[in-house]
Image (cartoon, helix red, strand yellow):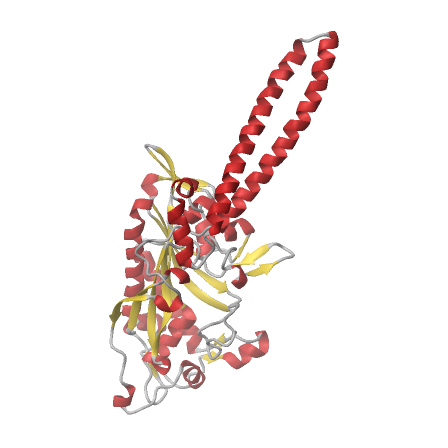
Length: 422
């Protein structure tokens, strides 16, 4: 959540941030009114409590009729204290509810606009000219069938639309990608983690996934568990309610997990193949650092994502995501989009977000230095989302006979140079 002082001292900036996100700026005014009411309720409650304490002492030393009168006054005052306490509690609940609805204060350097208003920062690599090579490229679904690597038909039969099986070389390709990702992350100083994928409400709410993103979250109502859509959630909550030592920062984790998403509101989009699915595996980078170090850490995460795509020998572009397409926690986000030949366009395969103190305030994660305790900044970045990376590899490295060349970086993990039709 945003620092309350920022909203009090600079409400116009918060209103502007809400506006460029396409969210409700009047939440700021509603919060300020609720904040005033909360502070007034606290003052009233504390004043009555102080009066009650004084009266209690007077009752103890009083006698006879004086004591009886004081006891009667004490009963009336106790009712007032109870009512004031209830009013204070209600005011604090409303105050928190409104605060949780306000998104993070956007980075002024982020492009303003909707999904299509991103800014291309750079393009790396040149897409292949398949026509010059003399053949029409197959899409990943056809290649997956030829290689017996992807089975969407049986996935739909067993689980429904947007599910799939990875079989044979498809499954081995996932293991190779995961092993390469974890190996690379470990060399870069990340601690590998296999986190739980079922989390309690405070973890999901603390990372900001029960606001605008709630429609895409699977909830197990009977047990009140949430299935995570990214290991960002359990990695962010890993240090919930902890005070970290200054010298331990930055703390970097690489989490491997299965991810679950409803993909609500996307029906009719990417229904063919494994680009947009309900379940997939991913390696996610997560970093805790000082707030002042967050912009530089954001660039590091982006570079590690670029290094991974460079190793996969895939053409891609880096975009600065526009304000209206950011999650509530992020102040800025960079996406890496791989070239998909059969779609003749770039598609997102990784992203990295700077969430500053927003998640840490919700999750109560701080660090201690010589001046006291402060909230940490949290950042996340996808190192590899398996299905989309498989799509990019199959389509970019295919041959006319349906075989697929394996990127050099994956060959030691996969054990072959080429995936050949089964």
